[in-house]
Length: 151
Image 1 (cartoon, rainbow, N blue to C red):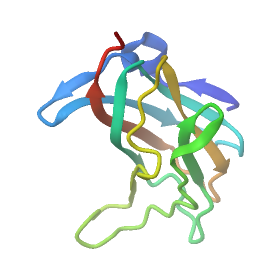
Image 2 (image 1 turned 30 degrees about the horizontal axis):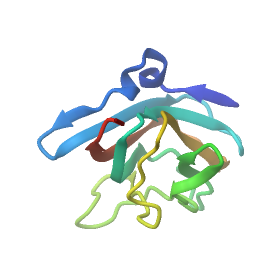
Image 3 (image 1 turned 135 degrees about the vertical axis):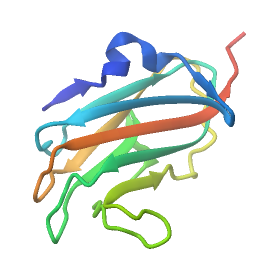
């Protein structure tokens, strides 16, 4: 897989904040059709200059269906691949009263938030470890923040 780009990134849609009832959200989705290798990079979207990231989520289908899962996906930027999420192995197991279907739902870590880039910055997923038993699926990233255009 090496380095690939989400459809949102390629068309430029990922660089334009979308608005919903809770505030600006930038999002992108990518369909994984092959097991990623360690060190593969998925460029999901571009955080525009002046977009103040205050929270975010990675949501994915259960991509690793082995009894002992190994898939690890970190979210960050070039030079700091775990800026938003250092996931550890992702099991995709059902969690009663939270996720009633096998899937991955992980919030960004808050130690580096809020984060406001001064220039457009690519948000990347770095695959640290491949899935033990790969199942094709999707991975999405939702970035929540305030858009404060640079002056």
